[in-house]
Each structure stands twice: as C-alpha cells, then as structure tokens.
Length: 417
Image (cartoon, rainbow, N blue to C red; front, side, top):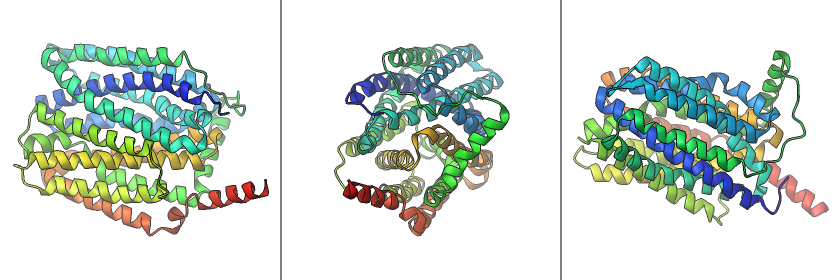
C-alpha cells in the first residue's frame, strides 16, 4: 500500500493536524485556567476530565470496528467537524464570565465521542501510508508537532483569555478543526479491501471480539496493555492536579501555569526530535519500560522539592515531557508493528479504552486525594507506583521478547529470498 509519495501525503496531514492541535491546545489550556482560577477545585477539574474521557472508553471499542470498515479519511473529517460543532455550542455555556457547568460537562462528553473516532483513525492510517522502517521516525515527528502545539498553545491560550472572554476563545478550536478538514481533502489514503458492509449487532460484536483476540494472542502486547492500565490508574488523578500543584505548592498564577505547560511541550519537542533522527538499535520495549520509571521519578521529585524551587520544578517538567514523547512514540510504534493493518482501528480503540477506564476510576478519587492525602503527597505516591509498574514490566519475559519472533521470521524469509 505504500508509495514513493508517502511523505508528501503525510505533509498535508501533518499541516492540518498541527493547526488543529495548536488551537485545541490553546482552548484546552484556557478552559483549565478558567476552571482552576475560578473554582480552585480538584473535583471540578476531575469531573471535567471524566466528561472528556469516559465516553471514549465506553464507545471506543465499537468505534474501532467501524473505523476498520469505513474510509478512515472520511472518519477523521466527520469527527473533526463534529468536535468543532460541539466546541461552537460550548461557547454558549459561558455567560458574562460565569459557566453553566452542566452544559460544559455535556459538551465535553460530545467532544469525547468525536475523539473516540478521530484518535484511533489517525493512528491507524500510518501503516497504510508509511513504510514499516519509517514508522518510528513518523511517530517522532508526530510527537514534535504535538510538542510545538503544547509549547505555543498554552501561551496563546493564556494570551487569549487575558484579553478575550472564554466564550470567544473557544472559536479558535472551531477554526483549527476546519483547517484540518480542508487539509485532508488534498490527500488520498488507501482503503482496506477487507471492509465489511454488514452493521448488525452480531457482526459488530464479532469484529470487536476478533480485535480483542488479536491482542490477547500476543501475550507480550497484552501484558504491555495491562501495565499501561495500571499506570493510568495511578497517574491520571495526579496528573490532572498539575495546575493545583503550581498554584498551591509553588504559589503560581496563570503565567506560571502556562510556563509549566510550555516546558512540558518543549520536552516533548526535544524527545520527538531525537526519535525522528534516531539511528540507535535500542529496543522500543526497553524505551517504554524505562520511561515508566523515568516519568515516575519526575512525579516524585515534583512533589518532593520545596515550594520555593519553582524553576527546578520547571526543569523536572521539561524532562518529563522528553520521557512522555519517548513513551508515546515507542508504544504506538509497537502496536503498529505487531498488529495487522486491518485490525488497527479496533486495537487502537481497545487500547485507548483500556487506558481510559482505570484513569476515570482514579479521577473519581481526585477530590478525596487532594483533601485527605494532599496534592504534594499524591505526586510522590503516584510517581513511586509508576516506577513499580516499570520494574514489573522489565521482569516480564513476554514483554521483553516483544518483536523478537517477528524479526527472526523476517530474517528467515529474507534469507530464503
């Protein structure tokens, strides 16, 4: 399915997705600033997080079935359009600076439904266009684009909410989604010949089960998923409290919050840049496991250091961004290499659901964690738990052997040829 023009095709995709990521980052951070400073409540931040995540977890696996049947380009276009429409409606939830939180939560749910289709479809198109030996480099560039949006987005969001009401800031996301749709109109994405026409409940459940079997029969990948679920369970309720750690522990405001978001993006940009030119032979599985531990340590030190060491916190967060970039790109590439293209939509949807469900459970305890344990202690405990997951992953033979059998098979086939 790959052609010599794959890079040109991906340029169009990258341009549109970058503009969409940039505006979404600006809007998301503006909303975080609004909720954090206006309410100063861990529970409200947690409820917003749940509203944005839970729908993806519930319908994600079913969405994956249809992503594998439908034209993935059209899926991305329609999902972008739906998300933009929901964001436009959300602008009416803010009247004279006051939010109708129920309306905000409801529209976050709707946006999440759109993401349930868009995110797996975006990940599933890469193996249809990109040669296998270029997948990690493409993942690295994807991380770089995401990082640049995370650098510029918070700054743009902070600037926008300083001079504009939050209801007007939301229009940025609508503009970005529209530009992403236009860019997709200029590319051709190969269609899978295995797409099926039937859509009754029995065939959908059969396809969903086949996606789960595809994961389960690969024991190493299955265990890698389990460890990812454990990580998100411990980390998500802590990660969502980054703004509160900045405000309460480091006595920051909106600009300090934006600095933390920006340096996280800088770290991801550096990590993506390293991966895009990566010539080393280190296993992607080792990278994933090591980043569990590395990211966990950044959480531990963020909570452990004194509140007057804000710039040390900035440096630690930058290193955390580098670690997250390595983790995301390596993890996604492992899935793209281990799973056949016709199953990728389902598998990515299942993965996102597997990762989201425990994080939602964790978010339900965010308010209790903030009140009873404290934000600082939560960072330390969550980070240590993440380190333990990384060590367990290193000690799991099936995980450490991921990819080795496939590489040996490829070597045998090349020798026969």
